[in-house]
Length: 184
Image 1: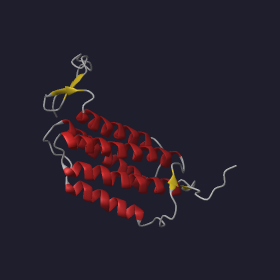
Image 2: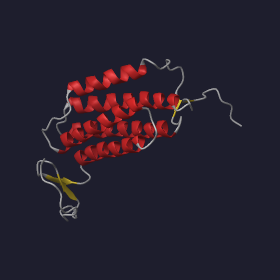
Image 3: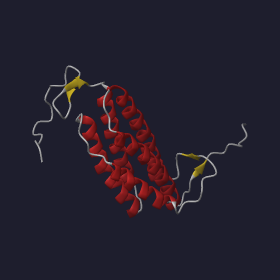
């Protein structure tokens, strides 16, 4: 393990810059900081999902995802570093396919809801989509490995499927969009 933080504040960021993992200083509002900051936010939101009651198989998947998101944040924080690989994307696809196999086909759009865990998982899904957009924005300015973008894209799909699983297993069911509703 590298250096441990014994003092939390350093004052080095007081002028609006922060240090990347390679020691380079950049503005705190740079595309790179926005990208790994949003990945960190996603990891925190998944922590909120994990604070809810849920089945063990879903919990295990989300804990593994949290570790990979920490790796991804490191990759984005250290230019040129690689931590997410095709095998990680492949594992997400396998897990996604496994959970999706037991779900009925979608015939309607699903609204966020279906119980506390499912609702929080929907928030995680939307933050994941934002993280993906931030990483794509970064890729327009700086080198970003394609695996990072693919990972976030597949993770948002997995989170959507987990929303469905959590809503159904909670007994509350999915909240379907009523496109034929009448307006009062």
